Image (cartoon, rainbow, N blue to C red; front, side, top):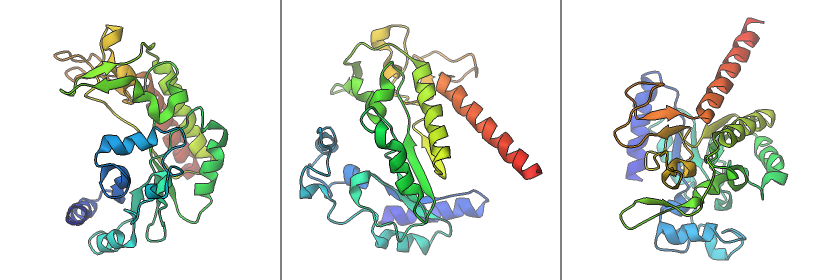
Length: 267
């Protein structure tokens, strides 16, 4: 709570300098904080997500006893922060959105299993009386990643020294990643989503390589690829990364939205 309130004060100072700020009281706290779900470690709690039926149906213990989005934090935050307040949720957390200004979820990923009901799920959120934000969505950079959605990084594992290793031979496919990002942005727009945030700019712990078995960026959600140690890019000289196709797709989408907004303003 002390951390949240300190953050709220810092956010208010940024807002006072002219920035547009929405304050999130947390993100996926039931996973990243002990006491809400079974399991003493993050790995154990993530294991629940890997079960075929997911966490919520597994047992009553999977429902957080006290949701991390309860009125207490939001009320205290409002005493220090004067703009919209929300929480980045997971579907099973059972959030009471009454204390919040924006409904928000990190579950913005579409995969092969969720695709048939994906739009319907969005409509259920956007039909409520508050703005709706997808606080996380994206795709990794290998063929077949679109069908995996948020599990696209399951092809990498880490040793005891936090070094990555690819567990499957995959084909690098930047166009699949870019197509996924652009298609979901269009769907979000069509279904009335108010904001959507791409995961992520860069995975600095998953650098690319000309050697396929060491091209860890294939398991990364970043819209830029981190170059091997000591190398710098040519698109933006001096920086240790290069844009991927998804970077350009996102830029094109942003330019088109800006142009459409300007045209509406002029007419």
